[in-house]
Image 1 (cartoon, rainbow, N blue to C red):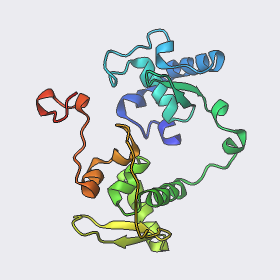
Image 2: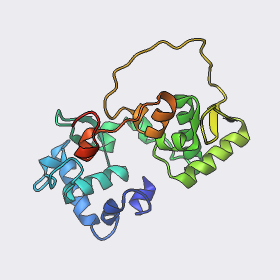
Image 3: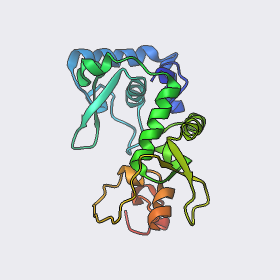
Length: 216
């Protein structure tokens, strides 16, 4: 969040609001403070240019505020739109009052949690889980390997090295079924889905019509 506030992190189109357009973002923040939780469409001119990812200036400013930690969200509207609110009105004071961890310690913790959640995972899998940058993830993984928290392993058929958390348990049998939403974390990193299940997943609405295999 501090990096985003300094225009050192986040999508390029959002970083302008950390600099010359910060005043515009601060004005939106003031409205949320005064009016309560709001979506982008609740602001004047908040509607995008069409399509889910065709963001207007209001949406981009709100996302920069989100990345920089000024606002967050606890729910969405039925239309899938994020409902933004002040961070201090969403998170308990006991959480917000905790000391901010050192960046490297934070990256180590995120990679460790990723490993515990994913089981066996490549470096790309581990960093994608919390959307860490390649360099930050590389340093964290190396540090966790040195400490013995991550164990390098090889998986038959995988071209890249993999890692296993030292507390991972090997089940004798796995029985489970689940119906996944199109944006479920299990299929964020699609190369992992293909490696594990042999399933090439694509969302038809984002695929050119001629290349769709399962319709819109």
